[in-house]
Length: 262
Image (cartoon, rainbow, N blue to C red; front, top):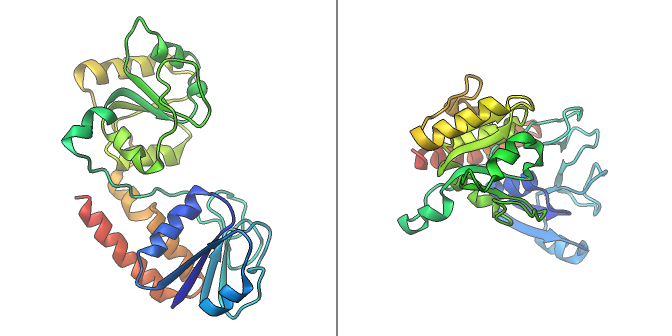
């Protein structure tokens, strides 16, 4: 089978989905920008998967099955982000490589790690950035921050390595997918609910000074790996459109990658 992956815009879940598809045995073509009808005809895909918004079919008419990663009300349209979408498949985690050389361990080590703007942590942020306390706090954000701990922009493939080698990985308690990401990366989660600053400070201090580790009742690593990876969402999508052979190829690849993590 020939599959055309057309990228209209940068979306992390769509990028992860294309990464999964690339691991199958099928012939894959990639395109973006202006659609070249001649090139499309020459490639002659059996399947087109794209993230063009507000369309229910690929704009250029072909015999190919069109899978739409958007929020349109269509039986072959799927959304990772909109729970109200007819074909909402849900959030998921990406199985990132956690292996690093001994020479790189220091690069990924920290007392506390966060990926994103830490402004949501309010008073807890004041504690983390207080120069007198001397916590090795690292955070990454596309927005520049003029406070202690800002480390620029992080490659998304490295998220798990920073979680794994931090003594504590902070997250907002409602940010379930980030929490899943921390758990499958063997990170040490400390959850902030907007009001438990003292509790978080205590947990962070114990994680730093006593190597305290924390578990979350509602987040089990094995359950996440079994049910909430990008592989599971890809299998769900292809099964829903009747492409069970591709779904099975992806299932086999998932088993290989899970096995490599053990």
